[in-house]
Length: 353
Image (cartoon, rainbow, N blue to C red; front, side):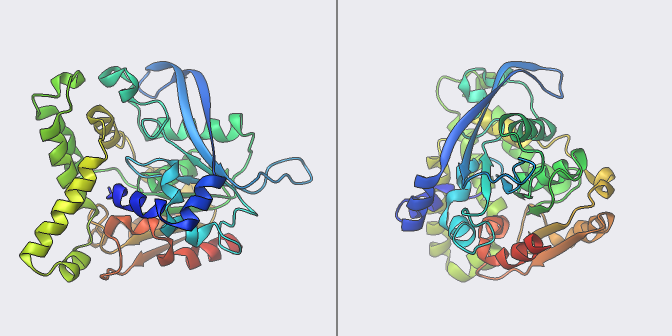
């Protein structure tokens, strides 16, 4: 969904990044005999998570300052330590000031350091979906961290969709929702098509061998990388920044090298793109009665505004506000969700409600 290696390279050279990375604490929770929606079970599910800040307890002894931030497809909790997110939100007086908030950044099932197909099970790993991922998040929050209510759930891309699942599955458990860069409807049309193209490209590579490959299926993963570049791009920015053919091709080469440099496991990627198959909170959106700040960007290939979905679905939630960030050479396509400068003032207003 994004050229994460470029972001990482910038972050390690950035003083604030190093500071937040140093302050972050990592841990892992394990859940025995975790049962998936498919009926499959895993003897032990591991959920890795990162935290910033300190839990604060009220007069009842309950933690009342917890915020959970949910990452996108192929990401991890540490995706939110990048400077364009962390520097805007975690500092003194910022919307998610870590001296006042306890920030929880999970690695979702199949991602980061949490249990995933590449741990060894490959395609025998349970066929998890978004409901399973949210169930694991809920157990992390309630059972492991002992939190009864969250101050906010903020989610980007896949995490945006998870926020809508939370709102319809556990109504009111989060006092506010901030879903960025998604739609609360079934994944269909072009959105499903490009995901299936990615899956099919991997499976069509002879090196994949039904998931039991001895060397990475590079041909299939090259197609996945190219599709990810297109899906995450801002057409206006690309045209403005690379107006000549040679410039565009050089930029593509650099983006492609970054994508391939991630060394993504092919089986993990298949699960990532397929896990949205059952997602559809639309019939239950009326259950979401807490304040909602829903933001998409007009340059988002994955969630094109011309479909009019947001304008229709936002009416089902009595306290929801939808904002569409106009496209410009400065916005980041689908990845605008991680650049907090575009929406942090709106987030601050949500938190003040």
